Length: 405
Image (cartoon, rainbow, N blue to C red; front, side):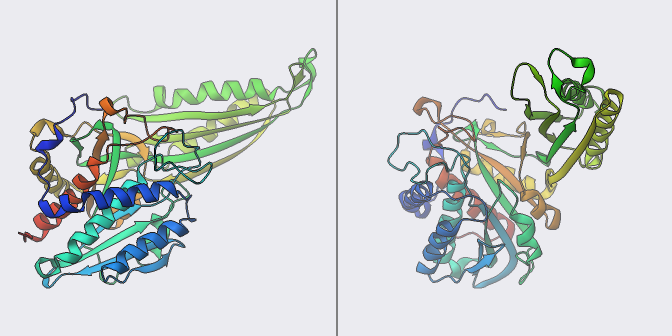
């Protein structure tokens, strides 16, 4: 990721109407932060979003994929249909920040910035609703549940969120503490990775720790599997490609002198190139099968493909790169070396409609706002919120060829 020093935020080109909304957007974000909800349980969040949209005369459609919403803003001038997507869900993390807007839901926290994404989308809706007479086409804003899992994008698409009217292009963003405030990360092609999950259950034969010859040691079998799985990336994947096989959980046994008859291993697979979509599951199965057969153990493998890679359209990415330069005013603050193997189900939207997903820098090291995503002390510089609204509005202007001035 970029090592660029923090950009002077006073150089941001945020239009006065959005600057006037800035404190309101911050207040919305802080309210959402206090009431985090997990995937497909975003009831209070959805009610808050619906209330704010209705306050400005908009009629959101609710109950899409259980707790999702969408709202259509019709311009007075003809033009395309542009979709903007924001995710709403939180994580099962106990917050450790000592702030006035600290989470009030024990064991749940907005530790990835989705409260900011929702607030940015609401701020954009407010700005567009106030400027309908100068808006060309239609803007469909999608408030998506369950990005952190099991995934809300796909069911929203299946329930027609990209139809009536048909969406021509879609745009999304993710606040990123991997980038400092004032930096935009955007690139054509893959920007975020695929996210697969697997679970392995090894069945051996337990026994006394002093008599291993009478057993099939599931821990030893599992250890060999863990080591062998690392050869997939190091010896089977083209070195020019990026991929990761991570073991996040290894559970077996309960006593130091007992050989466990069962071991459970769980992990994740990440990659950018779609050609590997049907590769890793087969390779993992072959390795697990071979080792278990050689050691006299049996196994069960559950491999799930969750999210494909997030792949940006080249033409839409070019537009986003150009408007980012307008907003940050510094050519060194728009970076393409921003790929990261996060998983994101924005990928499903981009499989259906051309579009772009970009990273908006939100870290401020001098203020201690640079903890990584999914950390119990994650927080971000709220100056990024108005930048997000400005980016969305400028994209609409550039794509439609009409400005709001």
